Image (cartoon, rainbow, N blue to C red; front, side, top):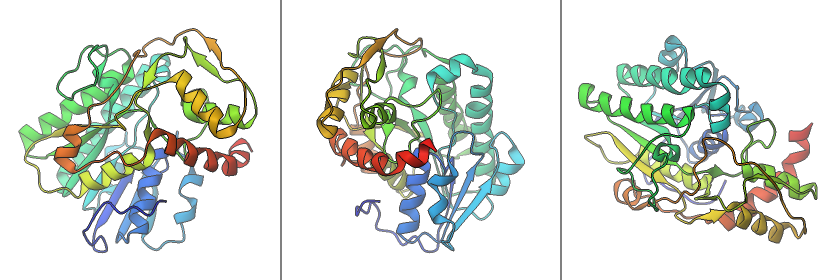
Amino acid sequence: MYDTQYHTQDLSQRTFLVTGGAGLIGSNLVEYLLKYGAGKVRVLDNFSTGSLANIGEFKSNPSFELMEGDIRDLETCCGALEGVDYVSHQATLGSVPRSINDPITSNEVNVSGFLNMLVAARDAGVKRMVYAASSSTYGDHPVLPKIEDQIDNPLSPYAVTKYVNELYASVFSKTYDFHTIGLRYFNVFGPKQNPKGPYAAVIPLFIEAALDNKAPYTNGDGETSRDFTFVENAVQANVKALLAEAIDEHKVVNIAYGERTTVNQLWNRITEITGIKVAPEYMEERNGEVRHSLADISKASEIIGYASDFSVLEGLGIAYNWYLRELPRLKA
């Protein structure tokens, strides 16, 4: 955790629920809330993708509570929200390839589970719900940078599910006066992101390859570009969105660094950090992937005061040091 405080309010009398709290963004958010004195931080997770190790250090904290459960069950969602003031809904089944291989489960978790959380949060009368939206919603829209109201055709089942989230959130705002904020994340990375498994993200895979002094595999020619976003920027966005002044409609904002990095440039930066001299090995392009991505973050700045404090290079250095320490445990 970094010595950067993103709020001025007293959190000691406030209760937070973080769904997917054992995942990358969720566990880092939990760490922040506990560090700055939240009265209660409850995590709801079924550990299908999150790791108990990500939140193990919080078990002795009297303000921390773990609830193992699945957002696909409405009763579980309602129980998790008892006595909660604010909810950060980070539970989602990510990965474009996963959704292509199993669109039904992606839909059950990302759509039905999301709707359960919306209903439960509305009925519980929470003060604010923030949820994980996705840059995949932009689909094949060609214009860069990506602006929130300019989207096009989704390219994967995952992208469809995240767009449906936004549609449901908008309907709940107009129909029930239950206003939420969606954070369209752009390729978030950082400590507590697992490099293991068939759907691991590119940065932990690249760092693992570098630590093993092996050539990484990359899909396509390496000139695909992304707006890679260090996890602390996503934590900041959640905190500021949760505690922002009252809103009177559904909001969606981009959360990114605001700079485009190709996969080849990414590997070059990692080799600069590690000092290894190995070229990547190229494979076929993956279906459902957009070629380039870059965010306009001005709306997030305007609405919640977001600022992309951590650069990609800074984030890579922090992530590398974390994997250097933790990779033996992850491989065990």
